Image 1: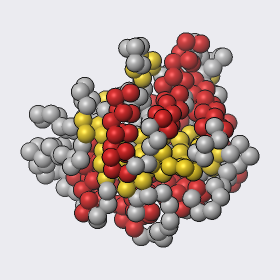
Image 2: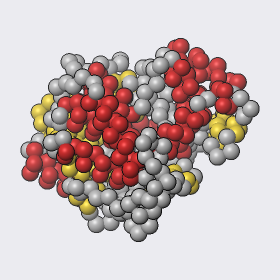
Image 3: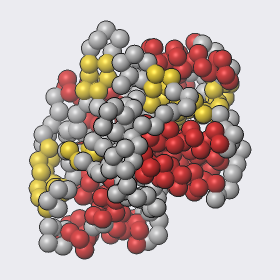
Image 4: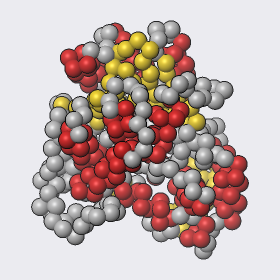
Length: 399
């Protein structure tokens, strides 16, 4: 038992609060329970299921459709005085709630890029379900280990030339200029290997080879585009090249003409462990939050995933743009929203930061990623860091 406080190092928090994670998972479940339920896939695989959009996808599928869910995560349990990762606590909480509500929920913990985890996942699907109806690919990782031992690491850089713009130092709350240098060809290729669609395709191919995917199944992966001010570092940067490959993969999966339809959902900018590390983007998100909250159109992960599953993807024909992408960033990219964001961006500086941006909202979302800042939790109380995941399937070296 110990008092758990946030310890931030760089762009991550090295501690997580189990009671806070549980309260925040419950709030997402309560949100879905309070909204209309619908018909949808009943056997859902979520690759990258422990945080953010992946966790919200799992909650929405379970509590909107009544679906059985199988999650693949890569998280650490507690060890000694060290807390578990927030993804571990999120998953433990989800399974506890799901099982109490009579819902099937199992979890595999290990490297989703590996053949071992793919084989283990397929074994469970074959034994428990026969086939899967929906595959959510929500994997976000900084590196990928190949079967021959080669390790690729992704980078957050521009392509072609440097880019200079405003950013924020979240520690000092100072607005300053930053120049992001271009990635090398090798770095771009490595980023595509990690964050592109190759592994998504391998998952689909493995499921098909095992006859573990239903006829007319759906698979969806998540992406982001954003406004022009972030394009150099995101949409047109090294990560953007990976997202282009993800889009190409969706088209290839659908073009295979075996009944599987693949979609890219372009989601709203939100605070995540990944976005916190991208230069320029945290300042943009802080301004965006202020404007969207002012207009009453701000959404978090669970609101986005509920809208994806219940309004865009499964109720009749999927609602897509000309590129066959589902646009959940439609509220963010409204002309009214973006014109106000641009106006604030042009005048923001350290002195007017609090007036022009929702820095408190940004920090709240950041700390809630790790279970801090949840309503009704006593953060001064001694807390047990050891939480088990009821159905966990671990692999060697997973932790």
